[in-house]
Image 1: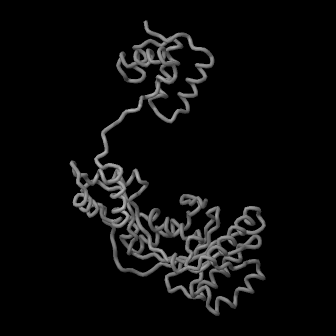
Image 2: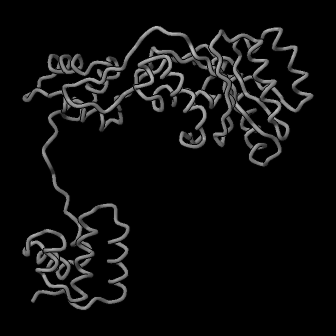
Image 3: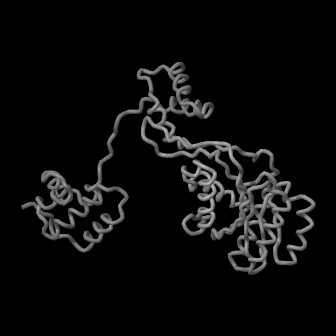
Length: 334
C-alpha cells in the first residue's frame, strides 16, 4: 500500500497553509491529498474524493516523496506560440488606439501591412488587446476639456475638507441635483442569448423630473415633479429639505442656471441662517457630485425593462426605486 512517510509538525503546518491559502486549485488539492494520506487514507479513497484515477493519486504521493513541497506545483509549460510577434503586437495596439471602435478595420490593416505566415483572427486580436490591458466598454461624453483645472482642484480640496468634517460629525454633507425620466430608455449592456437581442420599448412621453438629496451613507430624499424645473421649484425643494436638518449642513450642487439665478441667490443667506450652506462645485465637474452615480444606477441598472411599457409603469417603478434607495438599492460611495 502506497502511503507517505509520517509527516513532521512543520510539514503538516506547511501543507495546511498551502491547502487553505494557495492561489491555485491544483497545488491546494495535492497538499490536501498528502495530509489525508498521512492520516491513513488509501489510494482508492483519494481517487474517489478527488474524482481522479488511482495512478494520478499515486503520482502525487511519489512526487511528495521525491521532491517535497516543490514537487506539488505544476512545472512551467510553453503553450502555443503567439501568432503575432512582440513587434507585431505593438503595431496592433497602436492601430487599436487609432481605431478603438473597429477591430475588423485593425485586422485588415495588420494583414495588409505585416508579412505574416498565419493571418490573425479577431479572437487573436482580442487576446492581444486584453494582454495590453484594454477592455471593451462604453465610452462616455465628457466636458472635462472645458473646465478650469485650478478651480476643479480647489473644489476637490474643499469637498475633501467637508467630507472629513462630516466623518467627525461636525456637519452633515449632502449632494443635490436634478434628473429626468421618460419612456425613452437609456440603453444598458445586458447578457443576451447568442443570436438574439433584448428589445426595450421606447416612446415619447411626459417627463418625470426628480430633485434629489443624498449623503455619503446613501441616505436619500427626493421630490418628483412633472412640470418644468425652475428656480422656484428648486427653492421650494430646499426649503422642505431644511426642515429635516439635525445639524449644520453643507449642500453640494453644480452651477446650473437655476442654481445661480437671482431668485435662487436671494435665498442663500436665509438658508445659511437656518443651518444650510450652499457649496457650488467648479463648472464642468460632475464627478465631484456623487448624486450623479445614483442617477446612473437608476437609469442603467435599477430601472426594470417593464418600466418602459407605459408611463404608469415608469412612474410606479421610479417611485419604488426612490423610496428604497439606501435599503434595497444601495451605492457604496468610496
